[in-house]
Image (cartoon, rainbow, N blue to C red; front, side):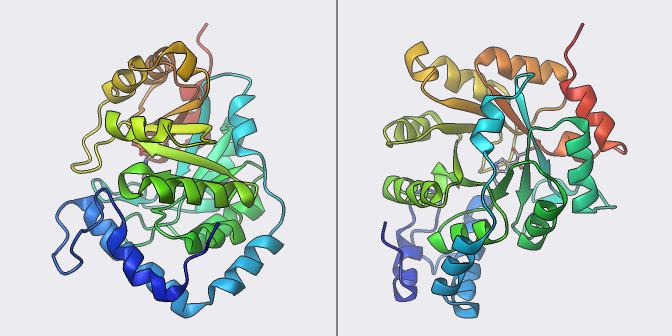
Length: 295
Ligand SMILES: O=P(O)(O)OC[C@@H](O)[C@@H](O)c1c[nH]c2ccccc12
């Protein structure tokens, strides 16, 4: 795949489809547009801080990846749990005052999470790549870099900080970018989790070659409302044949065992949970309560 040169970045910034801003001179409208508006500037700054070639070399020299996809697929008690290290969100503000990413990740691991998701966006989620790196050193579970990826630079950056998987959000990427970014993620021996939140995005993603892991976000990205019927509606539209060609993750708004059972019955093999776990005083216990098989 071809890596974008820095000089091409401005052009790319304008070409991002979906909810990215068509006219960069117009102020962003909804929250996703705001995030992308900031992200475009952040990525331009990243190119200026450290050349892409350096980051590529760092990514290639990073310790070997852990098998994110395999950990989900082979989880002993499905649905597999991806537990999210998430300090804040644009809709809810600070989720947990006392926030030690390593202690939280360790509690998730002790409780029985199969993989972890580490928010790296600083501006809206108060995450960081430093958190990703710290957690990588402290726990053995495979890690998802939870970022608004709009440029290959971020994928190399994530790998060099210990990512084993990278999120790609269909709403903010063209089909070509989805396909090229996924190819780069695979080339770096990582898992790509492709996130959709509408029927239209799902149809697009099903046309892309080599996709293995699809996340259905129950959160509406324009207004951040959550509805598990999202998973139900999108999964009901699938033929059994298509369903079994992919591994399905239900993301967001999962609060208890009933929610977990519901999305599993809809056909999800894994869940991505942040808020409901992170808000609990005893995170290890919260994971056990959420995942423990019912009698
Ligand atoms: O905290 P929740 O409702 O359990 O959701 C976790 C996760 O699904 C959510 O943080 C998320 C899903 N897709 C995203 C994309 C970017 C940032 C965050 C997200």
